[in-house]
Length: 258
Ligand SMILES: O=C(O)CCC(=O)C(=O)O
Image (cartoon, rainbow, N blue to C red; front, side, top):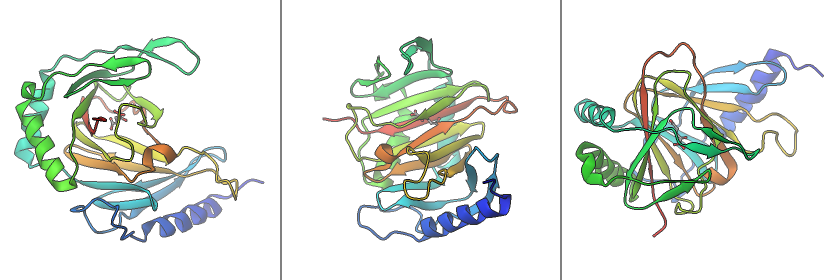
């Protein structure tokens, strides 16, 4: 049966209401904005596609008791600018990655890493340079460690030259990462969309298509994927946006297994 736009919005709104109630679990990382993130618009796309729920501003969205998105303004404007300049000077590569069909294709963005150990994904190892290469990024790491009460040993850095460069739907659940730890994403440069949705595209009970939660990944915005089941239960993406003509850098701070 064809669903009207109002029907779908109402369903999505109900879901948002459920998600907006802030969780007080001690598992939620401390020192994060206490307020719940509010949906600003809800857009139904086609009958076949999920509703997209947009969020803006700072706050926490609890998707489940064990999966939260926390958004806040990251660094001082001065430090953000220094980190951006530092990242511009790094050299980036687009290595070949193995697709689910077994082909090997270059990733549609540039990539490099800073850190203390190796990180493997998609059949490749991303060998990092030491933290001393990027002293301002190391300073940013220290501030985020203090704020989120978590140690980060590795920073994967993505460079999107414009809106044609993307990262597809995926979760960061590789063996080399300490399970259940937050992954903290710092955006610098052009604003892009950052989307999250349940891995299971349809609700088990109702058969409804899972909504897509969309956040503005603007300059100096930090988006934390928190909670022990975030990467198990959710996927994320930075989709194509042909209108974006400027470069964006993204740093995801991660905790490697010891
Ligand atoms: O660019 C982003 O915001 C996301 C990057 C990402 O998903 C990743 O590095 O795994």
